[in-house]
Length: 113
Length: 113
Image (cartoon, rainbow over all chains, first blue to last red; front, side):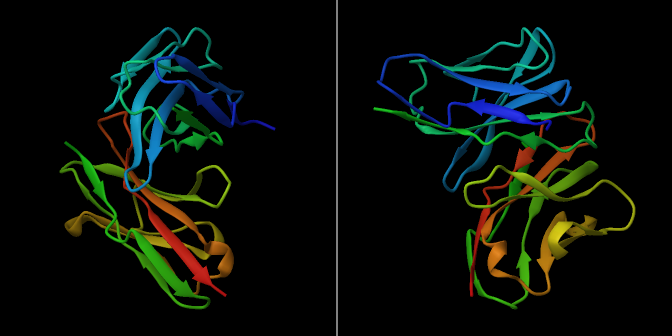
């Protein structure tokens, strides 16, 4: 079945450590996105990429980094510079174009202590 | 900056009651509109979408939404809710001239059997 796989489902890290969240899709979608979901704040865009080796900052990119070396993969690194990293992270993908809806993964819940 | 407002943060209904969730956006140009649903423990999935044409759109599971351009609104409705509709509902907008989705803060719906 085609879809988006995020791993792991739960992740725990100590403060000051960088951590990378995995996102893989086999939908052959060109565009991929990372969102952060916090209670009462909805989904906020961290980074997005519309083509391999290119990506753009979203509204809350500070403290995060991404790469897009392959069409299928869009890993997100939460760096130690992110002041409030504990959150639920969602990866999504879509066909290019505004008429195409987003397809979401199951998310990764990151807890930093 | 574009924004999407969902005024109802928590809604509790009894089964068979009618549902209407509000969604308003702030953007002067043409937009595409979406409603997503997140059932407990599941990934976000598309409920319905509006691009053009008939402003009353029908989605899955008996949901519908009406686009009122003059009010910048895209309210979600269902005539008779079921316990299985318990979920979080997100409204999303993407300007036709942009490539970024904007999400509302979400509405948590609890349906009591």
